[in-house]
Image 1 (cartoon, rainbow, N blue to C red):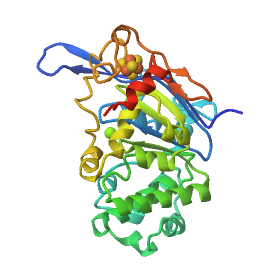
Image 2: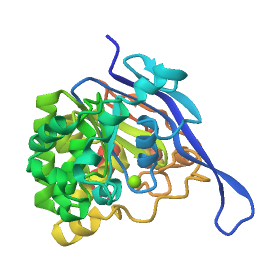
Image 3: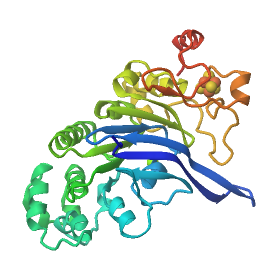
Image 4: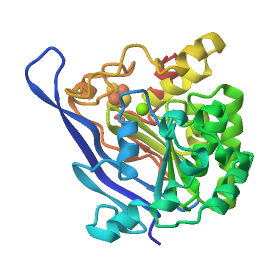
Length: 331
Ligand code: SF4
Ligand code: MG
């Protein structure tokens, strides 16, 4: 059978003027990414800021056109011309980090929540709005309020209601819980899991928060500088991430609390993510990898299957020499 979503060799480049230079450079924000997602499943995509996650999210939902590659839903291209492509792009919805900013402050919550139905040409939306608000745990009377009269958690529930109201096949969450406090994050994650059981919607979670992504995803993808460096079943990934970058991300989340708090803010690893305009040659992670060798500085590792669909782009992934060095401490 055909997967619900197939992303094939997706690329998105931006022409940019490099900082402090008059030359134009090419920023390869998403560089040859392939992935798939089944109906009713969740896929987590993790990585630090600047790894191309948000660009990938906007490409997948059709807010941004790819430079190259394809996005297929139920086997059909979302950029097919005319009504066919438009219909396919409507099967996606997106929930953003800042719920207040994604709702029109002048319109009522109910009007905002009903937008996807109106886009489909449905006029009578009051009942559906009421049902959806109830489903996400809000008092249906909130439909008459303005977004600023809701708390942050209520606003995020309303934006989830809006995302789900027109029965999308896939909802992409770009850091959708990052601005909420920890207890609210747990509530919203549980709500999303319940809604998935009830409605069968597929989710893509884009986040720098590995723990949250693992908790809710069937499969996890790790991105670094526009590329997928690891893809795995999430339980396998939780116990045994194989790429040194994934291992460093995980170690950062295991640190004790004061540092943990800092780690949440995207400064998970020593040093910054290098510029994606001129990414390091060979393995793009070599400038920060404690295991880097001369081979890594010259030769780009390909994404290979280490068994059971656990994909890793590292010359040494799974080898015993890697395990030894990593146990001496990566982060
Ligand atoms: Fe590190 Fe080399 Fe593996 Fe890249 S290929 S992650 S530099 S060990
Ligand atoms: Mg982002």
